[in-house]
Image 1 (tube, rainbow, N blue to C red):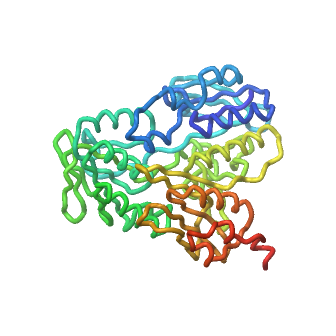
Image 2: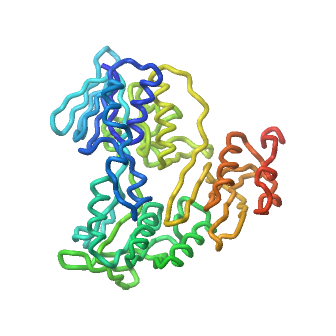
Image 3: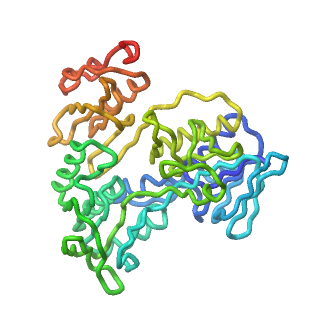
Length: 415
């Protein structure tokens, strides 16, 4: 019966493609809930000020799926799954429209949905979220006819859209409940840089502010904060994070942790016939907890690893995690995961909008946030393939080639 992949985003498409690349010859069915052929999501926010060319967003040419013998089916949301029971009975998935698809192996690549903000007025016209293509098209159309926009949430998506809206000449305010921007992703020095950079470009940033309601009659006219202030708004984008779609996994009795479907390095879940990849997953970290990594790179890397496992191939070394964000003319490139750092090294001057921050733990290099500093990013990304130590004095001098500050021996060998 082959493999059924539920979810036709970047992770799902990559599993299908990598299965064929690894010599998998059994049938592959790729089910997507959206009506559109699989497309890229990052440009929806990162390139908000530019034209939205739907054809250029496609992950693969239309002919790819037929040529690779992959059965792509859109507009089908899976509502029920019967798993293989180990007695020779195959699995069957059923969609809302009544389509039934048999399988031996199931891959969940269902992604996530925007985290909802449960306050009065959230159903007013002009209050929306950004996750998919239809939402992006609608938001762009609405933005074209308004002057004042409030972005609720100071994460990557919110800031990317805020930068695009400001570039289009809109009056933009970002409201963030935490005391700094990007608080879950970067160190305070990077958060402060982004606050200052956005304000230099004319975006108002309101920190430590909790939204209690949206005001208006029929259409939104303002955003009410807990301190009583009302920020005028003709359009509101709510971008307070993403929650993984785990309802299907929960129904199937799969183990979930850290907010996602629990998987190992090859995407295996707690059921031998089921794998999961992408934004819906969580995996163990070195601290004994669980981590979810919401990035294209993670989705693609885990998808390739999962495909190798299904095809019976040996696992390959995991690549270094990386991520990027485009906000106006500021490019942030992140390599590694800085969780658990005890030391920060800042190279360059944040006020000049060209610097990098190295994250260290026990003298070992963990990650880098490089702002308009592609060379530092590339050096660290390459170095993170080994457990590299850092000379803090040399690394802090932006005039010194960063390669000179990196140890030629691993931290484990030095002990």
